[in-house]
Length: 176
Image: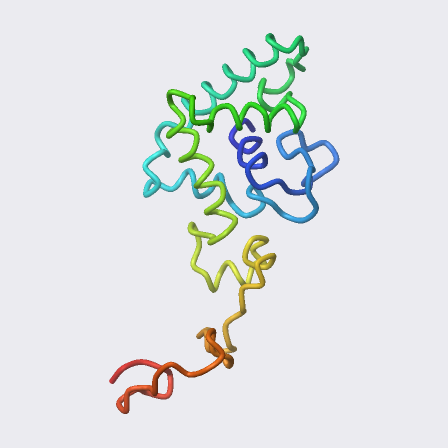
């Protein structure tokens, strides 16, 4: 829950259900959590999958300290960071990623993975993400592949063809 709340602070989304505590519901549509931030973080290739419990523990310690400094009473039925209001979560994350924070690189890394899950669906094959209606790719207007699963772009990004295809290019776009 703690890491979900962190990811939701980075790219907010709507609650998954009325009793969702990790996702604050600060924005309509799916955010980092719906986009698979936790799945991405749990991928060994990230290099952080083995220390996620440490991240959650440290984040909750920072939340407890913040709450004490601001006279906030935390709901003990959820982790401390989850118990914070969205605005307070944002303040904690802003502090953790700020230039004066000694271990800011750790928090920036976690924030980058939260963004990456939303922006790229890095933990999924792109075609699978599109078929599943990945919220980040849909929000950004990422084009769906053609019926054969390949992407073709009828319009050129610069508004004109930059080069002619190589004469040995196959009909599928592969070089011969």
